[in-house]
Image (tube, rainbow, N blue to C red; front, side, top):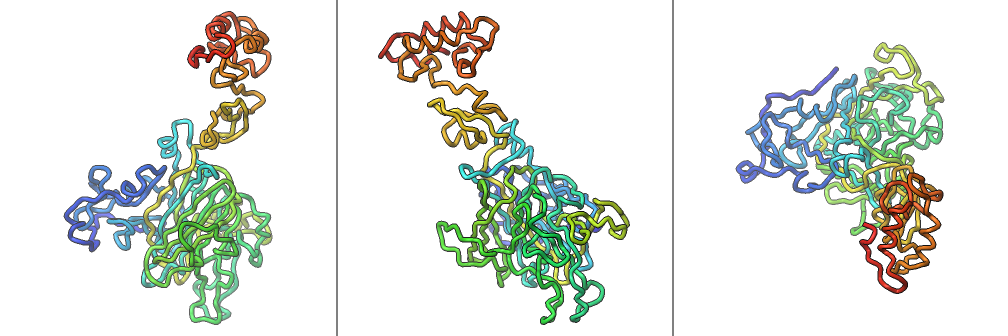
Length: 493
């Protein structure tokens, strides 16, 4: 197991003297104090200061990668897991780093569950979050391109998923299952690493892969720079014979797309002039996914250039986990979505063997920083949504509230839910309680300890004891003031 552990190393970031003298709030506290989840990697020091201050910005603290691994599970079977970095932070003093992406190092990842963060934001009954048209869910993060442009050889992405905040086993749930690509020694590549993985979940379907349209849905959306999506991995007409990423890639839950891939620009508050290309100038590529019911708006800003397009969601469910890096994939049996079961993948046989893969010759250490997840709604199964006019639709609870309704129990239907008037005794909703309302109430009388026979009559159970009896009659009579006399809105309380 390879690790990049930096413990006991003084932070030597060069920053302005004013930043050295004054404690600064973390990027998360300053920019996203109400986020569901925010991670700027700025509080992972041996002796962190009081919230919301960042670790001392220069020479005064020690990075604590172990503390980071308590949040971002790094104990997987493959490669280089995320660690702290004091170079190229988007916000001081630290960033994360995924290293090393080179051909002689295995690719690794770190992931974290979001359940507790979602509960803290939306309430204890919600452990998942959903993005809809009424309540979009936004994910943002940054990936750095240094002067050596190692990002072109990178294979890393940030994923928002469901049930994936745990060590993941290579198999059908991997975004990057693969078949071997062509032998690049045929056009001059070095022998030691000349056959690269070719990711199958992409269109057009690469040679040797099953049809991408037949792939299963993975409960995840992701974006990043993925060299193994290169349709021409050998680049025989060039000097360097290895795959590279030139543009942002997006995973829709079923397959990868190298953007813009013909997807339209939905428009926005400013023109988008970019085509998702990696910037020729070193700096952060700030990426944002705005998730709605059936689509995602992807934005990338790199050195002032904005790229934007609207892409589909093949996975349309909720989320409760986050991942960064490159989840371990498996090599597929030719023409199928099954792992090949070969015993030559770390010596482990079987349909879910651990299949670590190495990076490309051009890969290197890549910094990431400033993650945030915000907006959306706490997820529960859709249920009946009652409106003040007693109409009903089945909706997610968050959508119901945003539409002005009152959500019922999770999984309930309009057929088994009583949608009552604002004043239950005023059945015809004409602002008075009179004989017309009494006729309805009388039809609902069931007697003590006997539930009403029809669902709407539950509205006549004023005391909530699951029957309509003499006690409810007494309440109704107290409400009945006669025609055209405004009813007391508290009379059934």
